[in-house]
Amino acid sequence: MENYIEDSLKRSYTYQEYRSLVTKLLKEGKSTGNEQSDDLLHYSELNETRMNRLDKTIAVPQNIQEGLAAIRKKYIWLVLSEGWCGDAAQILPILHKMDESAENITLQLVFRDENEELMQHFLTNGGRAIPKVIVLDADTKEILADWGPRPQGAKQLILDYKAAHGVVDETAKTDLQMWYLKDKGLSTQQELLGVMEGL
Image 1 (tube, rainbow, N blue to C red):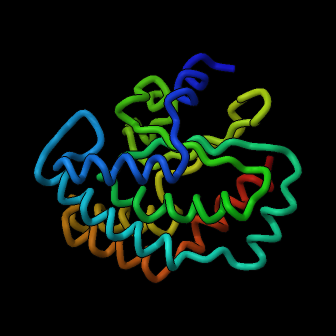
Image 2 (tube, helix red, strand yellow):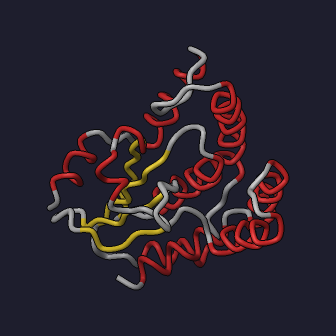
């Protein structure tokens, strides 16, 4: 097992612990992470509302439940995240529902800025994009796969917008949130099940 994996697992949180910590910081007028700003606080507050809604509305379809139930080995999903990240707010509640449906998957969350070495091993096109799901063998802690920071359809939407407009602005972020709303978490579930079935 890599030392940075072991170190990050020691600093990891359950979904409930993560949610509680983010909520506690918000009550103190803070966001997670090394940087503090009005914008990050605003995004964190939006995400808190978003995650509260998704915790109530996200469902795991029968075919995905059956696929997860068929997983025989034990795995850990170690996920890099931050409370201000819009994609994380959309994806973490989905991961939590999948974790609840899968007897052999354990979800553990870590904050990106507290786990620099881990993040450096899972960059996306050289950037520290989150959320990032790292699939570990639960017994050996061997890295088996990774996924993220967003499902293919959402990724393509941002790529197309950037190609057309040169920047990812507030309009792009709104379009992305609408995409997630319409998708209802299905793309993330299907892609992650595909990752697990390929192991």
